[in-house]
Length: 315
Ligand code: NDP
Image (cartoon, rainbow, N blue to C red; front, top):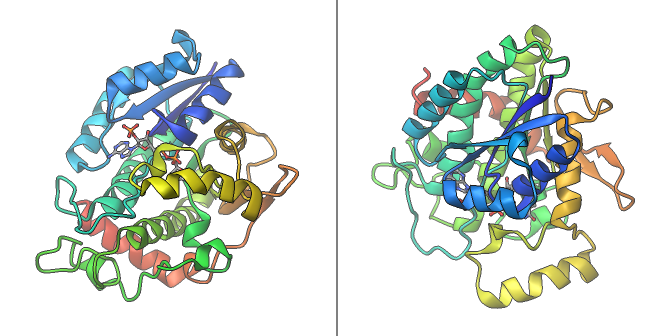
């Protein structure tokens, strides 16, 4: 049978390019988990993904209720779950004030980390039940959360601190909207959320890999300077960022190439090792990359996990 893969945020950028790359193999049915049905439908059509290869199911990661509803809908469809890709993200670098999710968490960490945390914690049970030979849970990471790289050292740097803001619920009322308890900074909130994504993947690996055989992985697909992620940025940035990445840092990858990379992590028989953060070299060959000190700190991973369980109502 075909594999069933759920991809969050498959309506644009990396998620869409991955959906297309997988659909082209004829071996996958893609469940596009998206907040905007019409946009997702148009995106699938314009990417040339044929009808029998995808379904769209509503998911708004900025609402825990929506995450629960998505899981109900998915289970009612009767499809087994073979691979889950947590890909959706928002980036609000120019926001002066924080915005909040339905449950009152700062929007970047609430969407990118907490929404995905609840989704993946619950869907682990579905992955366990699947009889697919290579089951995987993939959480898209980023270099920007990685302070052991040049790009990861562009200020403001990711830093979870002692997580007092996260423990307080990131609500901006009786707690700071930032994980480390500091002043709101949209670019930093995004980077912090990506560190949480990478820590979560490793904690999943420690807690579930031996018992379930599921492969847990994260990746940095390269700088895809053309995606919607930068839509909130100032126009001059959006104009100069793609050529800067192409010619100066040389970290630029096209959406198509990045989609092929994530599709490899979904389906390539040689990428089954669990607990790995994949990256690609100049010749587009995959390798196991090192994470920064903070993004591989086991104590922090456990703490992020435990606080997140409380915030999303699992503990
Ligand atoms: P895009 O903005 O193109 O895609 C993000 C997707 O997430 C969109 O489909 C968007 O939906 C969706 N999304 C946002 N908020 C929600 C929500 N509340 N509920 C459900 N879906 C939501 O960005 P990219 O493709 O660039 O980003 C994809 C991933 O790649 C992210 O995890 C990002 O951190 C990572 N990444 C990107 C890099 C880059 O250079 N672009 C580099 C490294 C990592 P909608 O279409 O409705 O807006």
